[in-house]
Amino acid sequence: MVTSVNFDYLTSIEANGRALADIAAHNDLDLPVPTCPGWTLGDLLAHVSGANRWVSRCVSSGLTAQERILPPAPNGRDALLRWSEESLDELLSILLATPPDDLVWTPIRGALGSVWWRRKAALEVAIHRNDAENAVNQDRQIIDARLALDGIDEYSQEFLPLMLHAVAESPPVTAVLLSPTDIDDSRVLSLIPAGDDRDPGTPGVELTASASDLLLWMWNRLPDGSMAVSGDETVVTWWKGLAI
Image (cartoon, rainbow, N blue to C red; front, side, top):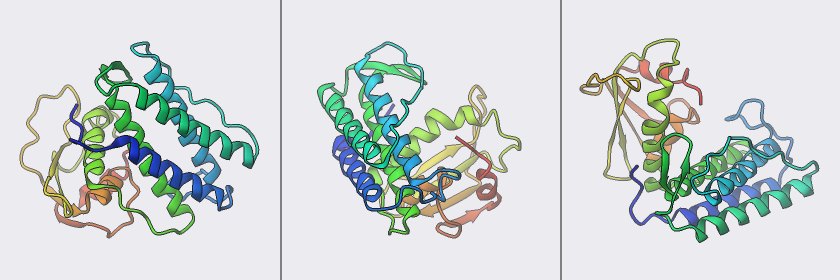
């Protein structure tokens, strides 16, 4: 696993976590979240807070495997807001107390340095802050380009190879070039499933946008027409069938 050099995940978690909590505190928690169909703003806050508590448990448990069961949120607006704040505080405290290179359990690759969870938590709250902003029609904050590249790497290395075994339709290309406009560091996404040793070859399409928008596209959260597409455009439609 490669993580961004000198990126402060904890500061990012705190800033985006507090921003998400502020949005929730000043808006109706029954508002729908368009980028998370079927969820309300309250559901989103409960999910992020439960995920924070699960990450805290995973990190504090060291190498002991943990089943992914998020604790239920309390009933009532005030109780949920307090629970959310406590969840974030607990997560930051546990991550700060655990050296980044301390080996802990991770759900996909087994034992890794706890920085894996720092990255995971930072991405989780950054993307869901974007969801909350969308729900209240607030201008979306751009995800830091270094964190966004981390998120692209996480998705393409940890999730995508396994997901490709479950797609109903084979991808129209075997490789996609992601070209961010705000950082000089492109990425090639292989659309070859895990366990298949084929070379993906030359990318059949190039997608150009900010690193933040490229990450949001991967998570099916980017509005149509928000990035430049050069080459086989059908991959953009095909990608919408991916679910995680």
